[in-house]
Image 1 (cartoon, rainbow, N blue to C red):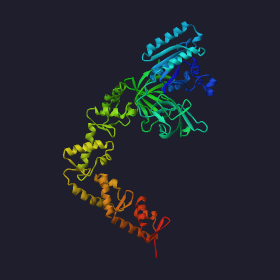
Image 2: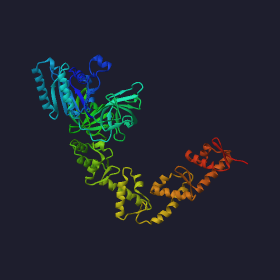
Image 3: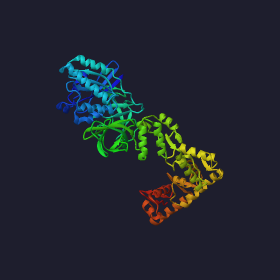
Image 4: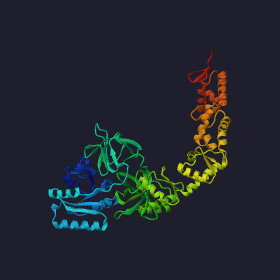
Length: 608
């Protein structure tokens, strides 16, 4: 099925809803308040189908006080049906709607000159010319598929309009493997549960899929799917879809984003391209309403030195993508719009950020990557390339590998500058200089240098092998001037000595590994050998003591029982000054003795 989402636009009372009813037989003004007031308040939906083409209508409000609803609907349009009263011509809301359509990227428009049966042909021709001149002057990139006189009382004009609408091309969908969908309505029909409606912006959804409600960071399972009241097993881009979800409707709101898990993070700062709409202007630090998709958030505008770009400080998180369009409202009117260029927080200085914005605005991603590489001394990630740059991992890696002076970790999806490699080199060298007996692996080094990936560390350690500073023995990197067998043979004794010196309260093995500059796998093998030979006893998870220390602890506990008649956590802590964790572990070892009986929380000696 070929799907086209068609939105209506135009001044209030120019006949949008009546025209759609004539085309589809459906009256979108179904809410009680809409019936009473005679205008479309929120987004109304209907469709018409012929052969393999389905045209879904989004009838949006024309009333000036409801412009934010019109903007929310416009983000899902493939094309627009611009409705203009043939006698009145273009009106303020007509021009306002055209500005919004341009900002959100709607490039195909069909103009319906309504009520044409009530005016002379000369007036129809005059209105047609007015539209053509205005569009050529203000929106030359917009394609006008047709300008048609129409009347709901003349079926031939309605049929001619249908023919044009069925021939409209759908907008090219963004290349994305993830499902993305803004909720524009939430219902709870009796006996069904939560139902939401919206337009599929990218990807596919199937019955049984688990999606993420971005604003809640909570999963939601799709229990059912309907397209224009018909149950289906799946839905895709360009379709108006109702989803039945397993989440209470009270937790959802208009503007919430449903998305495949793992692709989007929310941020309260966006950097954008910006252009004014109409005659209104914005000043630095203006408070506005930000609208992208069905999401609406209050924001403050901070202009860069180049006023074509701005930072938006939002009152709540938004989950946007590079290239997403948006509109800003000031005092309820569209004042500006543009494109999101940096959808995630980018910690770089203002001057460098402006250079980055210029590159992103020109879709010059190689230059953008080079700027990011120069400004992120610890590297920058590609894991979020779909959100950050609007491209997949494969394309992001291709660009990264073409950069000069970069190390690219394909597995971790991180790009590092040469300075990052030097930082890792210096850190590793300092460890071995401070402790010539260090046993390290790339994994253990990344536990210390948390921003470095294993591949980067392995590359640096490989360089140190080439320089004959390190050698690789059994997966462990040792200093080349040390004897590997001697170090390994003496390791268990070093561990035993440290544990013995720490007495009843030794540190956890992983802390000891850090102190010894010891790879965890090597340390675990040493502990396993010591425990198998009974030189070290495991009391609990990450709690090991020497055999002589355990004997001293058991002797102390028996002395307490003899002196006080029993032992429990309270008097054991008082006599030993140990924490509860250690006391419990030793008492559980005491329970394994044949001469001790546990009575509630107390332990006493067994007699007879």
